[in-house]
Image 1 (cartoon, rainbow, N blue to C red):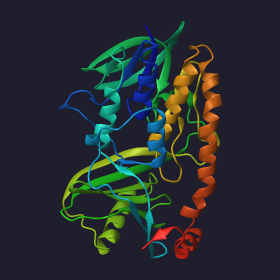
Image 2 (image 1 turned 180 degrees about the horizontal axis):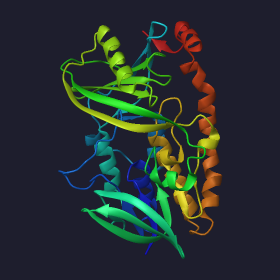
Image 3 (image 1 turned 90 degrees about the vertical axis):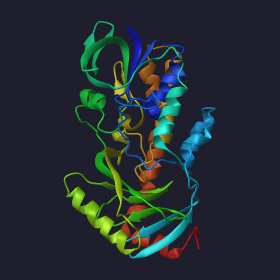
Length: 353
């Protein structure tokens, strides 16, 4: 019998387990193997691997410091913004850490108390209510295993199975498909790149240099010829001089884009959601690590007084995240309305030469 079972060991799940592992009996489940040095099965997280200032601030607030081997070259301080719809370009100064996302997740797992039970290479299957809590089932080594717990935490990202079980798709944020490819890149690029093109997506696309590779990604609406639009994007960028000849690997994932505060849902009864599973992710940039760390901190603080009433305390704290997302949604039109974006870029405000 566990006090708390956490499904998902990304930044939200791992940080929560780190903060509560000494107080509660915790089971952490993830389909990836985030412990072994040479894992046989490590599903690639479709992520650009940029640590935004808000995420840096949360890491500082948590009293953590990132090991240097998590960072990768090049460390850049400019974003080339390409507006293909309006045929405009600008360069803006920004402060991101370029990092290896897999190593980042593995580092967070390494900070967990030894008392936390970890089940990696495990696939969460289902849960059922029982007296005093829940019985969960997951697959490990091709066997179905059950465990009992008082509380379930869904830290399983967009398209969260936990959220799907308890919310019946009520107030679900809009879903996008993120496609990202890695290419060999022998030449140096001194900036990150953000691309806006109404023909491709009403969200955005990105290019990120990482060591000897170039990452090209795009957030696309599902069921709207996603692969065809991604290939059109690639062709347009090739005309601008980018080289996408030597493909190394392709990644994909669902991502949420909360357009309304009501789409942030933190759970019911003895089941809580953190990070992107709760809908806590930036609607303007799809940055999620800062929200993962913040929501898991708020949940940990809510559990400090015990399990009884923890969800009500968590809901009060999450109002801060909802306000932040509301403000970002109010600012989004400047980025995603073609006319307003054109005015902002033509003004040259805050741009660099």
